[in-house]
Amino acid sequence: MITYTNVKYSDFFSFFNVSEIGRKKLENGCTVISLKPGGFKEFIDITIHLNADEILQECNLWLDRSWIGDEQALNVFAKDIAKSFIRDFVHPDMQNEVAPLVDTLFKVRGGNDIVLTRENAEVPTVHDIDSSNLRMMVETFAGLNDSWSTRFQGTLLSFENIKKDDNNLLRIAFSYGA
Image (cartoon, rainbow, N blue to C red):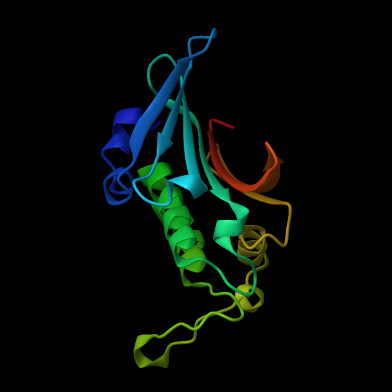
């Protein structure tokens, strides 16, 4: 189980200068917290659902599709906040399981992106990913698939491209105890 205190003091909160902008108590005793990062606020929303004991039940990272880019050009800042969200909102015992997801998401590039690397390392495009599961995740991130999900010891991680209030968004979500 992960507490709100755990994530509040994570690298994600400090690096992206995340701050609480709202809090709503629900009838069932749960609380929904709305957050914003310090930069790119107009493209990013974060919501956290807590139970009465401030244990995370669900966490959502909402990214504007137009800001993320597509299979031809992926925004490095969108990739950075997405991989950091996945890394810091998963239980510490599951870090090894999410490492391939985090690494792939951060390393992948759009087909037209130019990436300079040390020692001319190969940087895969969206369609170059060998693992079908990782490729589906990246394709969903790039807007080519509607959704993708995977489970880690009772935690569901999902990517979903949706339309909300006339905006095209990618929702990256953790559902704990799912």
